Image 1 (cartoon, rainbow, N blue to C red):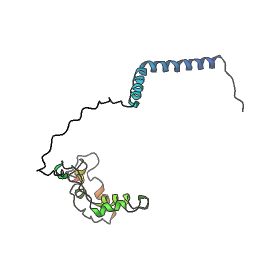
Image 2: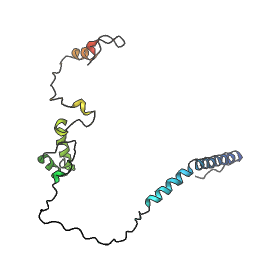
Image 3: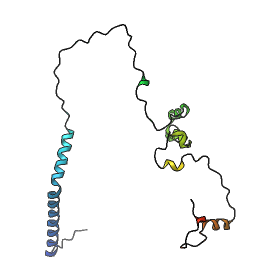
Length: 176
């Protein structure tokens, strides 16, 4: 199918105006943001350059003072360091071993480990509530099993508001 070239002076003027308008928009954008873009490009280029450290001249070696041999040197104990603060209790070795058994694709490995950890209540996993959302479910205990009402009217009477949609709320309807 051949392209139709019905360009008259109206279309030519339209396309000329569109071209000039886009050109002006580009010039305005460059005038407004050009300095910022160039500054960012210079900063990125400077960040890519390798960091050149100053060279150090070797100093004259100073012999260390003699150490008395009467006191045996003890290696530093790992307990003396600051204790590592964690927000979770340590994982049981049997649960940790699940990480190394199989792969997640076969519902083993990490998948099985995470599902096993998920079954524990938060009080057994965390030392304290980490976020405010934890406080909603913190120390709830075992869920109480509710008996299901078998009749349809019991559901309707307990679901709908008894005193109308726009009337004052009855304190019995509010869950506090």
